[in-house]
Length: 543
Image 1 (cartoon, rainbow, N blue to C red):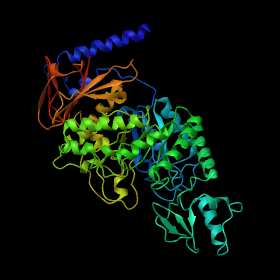
Image 2 (image 1 turned 135 degrees about the vertical axis):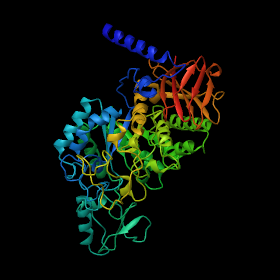
Image 3 (image 1 turned 60 degrees about the vertical axis):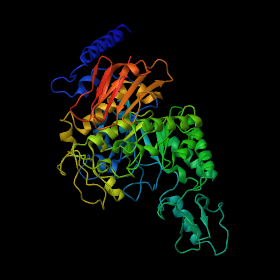
Image 4 (image 1 turned 90 degrees about the vertical axis):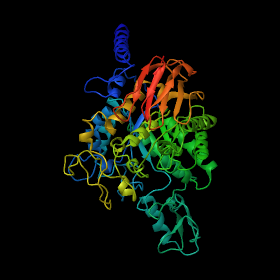
């Protein structure tokens, strides 16, 4: 205990010595202001569900064996990178066997796709993550299987040999009840089963037949699947396409997810569950009634989301704050322990480097990541966004090879999905950005650092100082329910011009500059109670 107190005291002295000069330039020689200020504050390690999650498309991430396809060993080799970036959770997009490159159509729920390696590779990856304090969640695709899944193949073979007009007998072929078959071949959302007068539900495409989630035997299969991966050490699941479990029947979606949440939490009470519900916020926040920990905050994401609109100036600073308050209230109204899952882009969206005109220096791209990563909850970052990768149009373009190097033949570089179009990246590869304290990479790294320095950023309930907030400036306090964690104030300058904030008028008590995010070499300064903020900057204030 004495050793810990001395360590904290020394850290405090160091922080005080750095911040005492906040009336002028805070940066040290060779370092950006962000590095000087943020790295003088010790990080705090907490083992809970409020993390910073790095989404990885294994196929395009890092190739360990030279075949041009990313693999689990490649992810394992890059855990140093993930940890140094500041993520303490990874989400692996589907890793089970599949006939497609994206692998959202599973043929075996209890195996690893051979393209990605072996089960031993996976076990080692999980173990190595846990040694570093990194949790692992995997994609759980339950709405549908592949049309090549043995369950579906057996059901189809049975129906093809069933005499015309005869009713299927699940006693003879249980798998015929695993899917939603009908003789109404013109039914919306259904695909015809070749060689028969049957059709099957397939909301995405004919290669993805929907499972009959009302079938008790299917639920038994799901229970076995989640237990299998939980026993292997997986820390939770990302739930794919939750609005499609029962299309247009949200009460049934919530009921199914309640069962699923209860099932997984019995297997691992600490499991983290996050759902994809690509719909309006009134709907996806209502899904919290299921007990699922988190749902992705789609209102803020993508080219037309609240974050991008705020960066363009189409949403004021004050309105951005009110949008965060609205989401907070809607989640709390449906689940007292619900955790927001903010994200800016994902594998289904155009990458953010193409969102803004006249952003050659990446300042808007940086600031957008700052807005995302300063939100409360378990924040998600899609691989490559930390360096401003490009990719739009067809899905393959959005899942391009991680831009480790400008040399496509460099060690670990993948070739990307077949059919991906050829295009040039807008910003430098990681190998160059890591050497630049003002790069997009360095900015994102510092944002993730702040989430660890100040636990209240992820865990705090938001209150807005409406007297100090206006079209350009947003002032919010984040106060965790856990009273052992220190509240912080975040001040945002949403405009592209320098602004001054008079802290004497602020209703919150935190008035010491302790963390900064700046999109260029211009610095945040504090002189007396005047906080001077360059365009598109964020300040963290403490007592």
